[in-house]
Length: 112
Length: 116
Figure 1 (cartoon, rainbow over the protein chains, first blue to last red):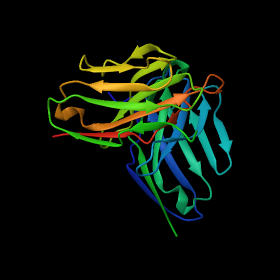
Figure 2 (figure 1 turned 120 degrees about the horizontal axis):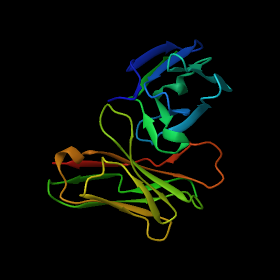
Figure 3 (figure 1 turned 90 degrees about the vertical axis):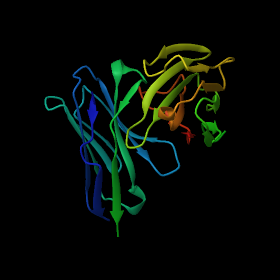
């Protein structure tokens, strides 16, 4: 039972354009959501998070949107850069804890 | 201190052997986590320590798995009688007492286990 789903295994975007990565969840009790980025041969790195009491959080080129009624969140990267090429994992916090439930990841490739 | 350190980075073993992984968290991080990632999946929570106390274990952690954090610093994860299904990347993460938001973990580079 996949509680956090990333239905797009890969995404290819031109440099300078917007990248939109999507994530759906099934458990309405999740109260905190995060995005992690992972380069090959490295561990995941925290990118940005959002509390369930908000619907948007921005950090530089990265913005996360949360739609609680649809149980959907998305990560927008504007403008996309080649260094953003990585696997992006969506994660939900179970009860505000560090016990994270991850999606299966979306591989983003940003080409020149 | 540059981050969470894991050793070994890669372990190849035969089915039935025991393996042990070590994790050194960031200094002063009192919370330490083990996750497992299999091919095509995201990381899955295994267990969690606060200082030396193991506070939670996932049902994924069978009796063949044991984790310790004897002095509240480094941690070990031992897998006894390995099976081919144990082949995965074992990720360690840590978090400090003053870190603000839940889930913001610092991950190591992982220990990849291959069971033949």
